Amino acid sequence: MEIAVFLAGPVLLALISSIALPGFLAMTLPWPAALGLLGAQVLLTCLPAWLLRKRLLPAPVAAWLRQLPVSPRLRRQADIAVAGLLMLPLGVAYAVSAGIWLLQSPPWLRPVAAPGIAIIIVAWLLAWLVTSCIVALRLRTPRPAQQARAPTMTAYSYRRPRWPALFLWRQLFWLPFWRNDNVIGAQQSVLMAGATASMLAWLLRVPLVPAPLLGLLASASLVLVTDRGDKAVREQLAVLRPSLNAWPVSSAHVIRLACAASLLPALTVLLGAAVLLYCIDPAVLQQRVTSVYAITASVAVLAIAGLPRLTARGRVALVVLSILALSAIGSELWN
Image (cartoon, rainbow, N blue to C red; front, top):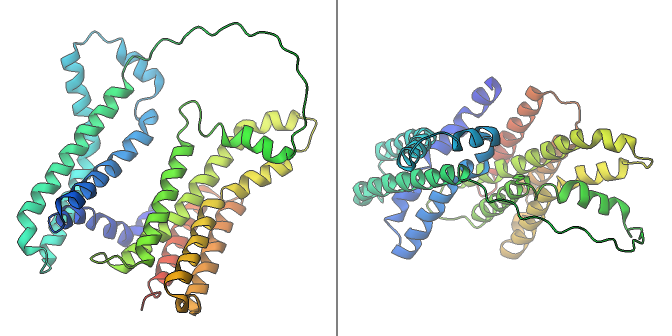
C-alpha cells in the first residue's frame, strides 16, 4: 500500500481531478451527446459495485439478511443507506475534482460552471440510485431451481480432441471464468474495452483532454488488464493443482497456454494501436519513442505474467513502476 501511495500519488490525484470533467463538458455538447456522456459516466462509476457485489454481500450474509423480520420499506431504506456509504468516497472525489477545475477556471468553463455543478450532482445521485438497485438485486430471494430431468443413458464413444491443450484450457480456464457468477470474464472484457477506448482516444488526440492523461489511462489499462488476468490464472491454478497433479498426463502445456492467454488482451491492444498509427500517421511508427514504448510495454506485461515468485509488494511495485515508465515514455509521443 505504501508503495502505491508514494509512487502513484500524483497519478491518483490526476485521475481524481478528472472525474468531474464529463459533467462540465456535457454542458458544451449537444443534448444527445451530453446524455450519452453522462450515462456512460454513471454506468462506469457503478461498475465497481456490480463487479464486487459478491464481496460486498457474500452469499451467507445475503441469506441471513433475507431472513430478518423487517418490512420492505425498511429494507429499501437500508439498501439506500448502504449504497450511500459506497457512494460517499465518490462524492468526495467529485467535490475535490470540481474544486480543482473551478480554481483553474479555463475560459471554456466559466459560462457553464453553475449548470455543470448541477449536472455533476445529478450524475452522483443517479449513481447512488443505480447502486441501491444493485444492492437490492443482490438481496432478492433467488428463484427456486427447476427439477432436472433424470438423465437417460446413451451410448458413449470417446473422441480425442484435435488440440488437447486447447480443449483442456477451454474446459478448465475459459468456461469457469464465465460460469457460476464468476466475474473474471466480464472483468477482463471491461478492462480490455477500457484499454482499447483509452488507446484510441490517445492516438486520435481527442480534444479537451490532455494527451498525457490519455497516455496514462492507456498505459495503466494495458498493465492492469495483464495483472488481473495473470492473477485470475494463478488463482485458478491453485484450485486445480491437486487434480492436475493426480492426472496421468502432463499438464505443462495447458499451464503455459493459460499463462500465455493472459497476455493476449494487452498484446492485441498494442497490435491494434500499431495498425491504427500505420493508417493515420505512418511517420509516427518510425520515431524512436514509438519503438521504445512498444518494447517497454511488451517487456512489462511479460514480466508481470512470467515472474512466478514475486511477492505481493514486489508485484505492486512492478505494476506501478510499469505504469509510470510507460506514461513517461508515452508523454513524448506527440511532442
